[in-house]
Amino acid sequence: MGVRGRSGVSSGLAILAGCTLLAGCGGSSASATRESLAERVCDGARQAAAKALGSPLAARVVSPAAASLQCVLTGRQVRVTIVSQAGTRAYTEFDTEVAHQDQVFGPGVHDPSQIPTVITVPGSTVAVWIRAQVLLVATNATPTTGGAYVTVAVSGRAAPAKIALRVATAAARATFAAHPNGPS
Image (tube, rainbow, N blue to C red; front, side):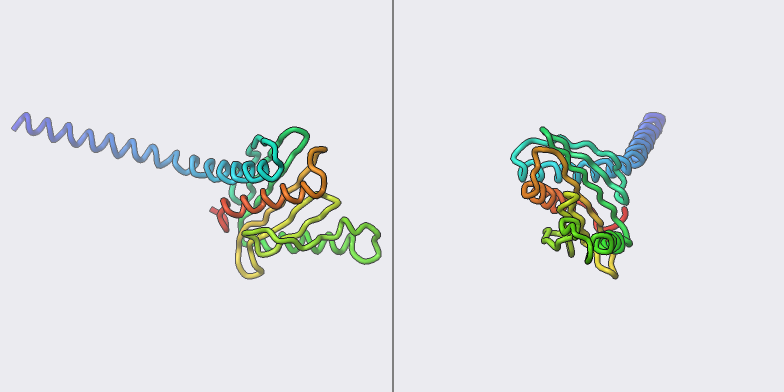
């Protein structure tokens, strides 16, 4: 009985140790998931933008939170800044940005490159390109549903306007594909 008792105690301690180990891993799992979300979004955008650019890019996560994810892609003479805000106000953020551009640079202003042009970005419900700012603004939300509000700014001598639009569209498409449609 003494041997069995020790075996039972040993088994119990082994189970307790296993549970403790699992609980400890569970605690770090949340931050690993958060990191992997940012890494997944930024790396997907990096790969897509690099392919569209035809040149390698490095990615740096600036903010890993789903509600305010931001990463910067850099390459030879090019910089791509991606901001993705997931939440219930994603469509409102998009609409406010586009309305602001229209009001400030609309009728009577002689800089048509500041007026948002509607474009198609796979994964989004609506998207615009602001040529003067080399900025893509898009969302996959609607006025009644949450989603992600995404901006992609391209700068640098290696990205003339036509290439910048292609790079921004690729990065936005990859961001929508990898990013959740709401806060996590």
